[in-house]
Length: 194
Image 1: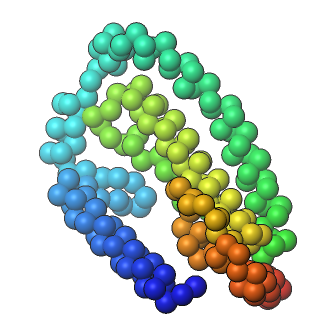
Image 2: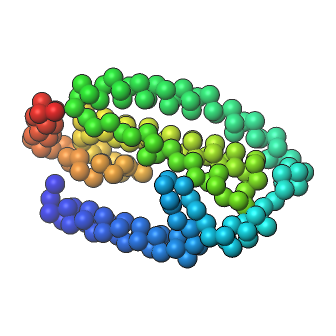
């Protein structure tokens, strides 16, 4: 990788750290913290959240017909998502040790903390749990796929890859055969050490 690309990647990482710091400041303004893995709000904030909760009956009765009709379609994806979860988890468990690839921690991607929000009713919490599972699972699967690609074919595409994963920028340039062979030799040597 050339020096300019490394410099740009370092600047991006710096901006990501700056963004995380700003998001932490925002959390402090909303007066909550995480204690022993659980979200905790100040008593006054929690009281206000409870006041802002929409009653379940009102929430359901005020739902637009299109939302009620499409909800089963949305929730029908749960079966393929669970199957994807099982198959990808088994793939990682079986194959990653053989390749010397570090496993992806599923718990880092599946986060179910929105259920602690007092301003959500039961159905809203269920919806949030579903979205957390679906998006967390896709991120988990993407990371497993990214680590697989980084091991087996760390070559950039000739065309622009929209939404490329984090590891993509460190891949060798399309058409650079020498760099590819060198990278594969490095990966094989690293795997043998593990």
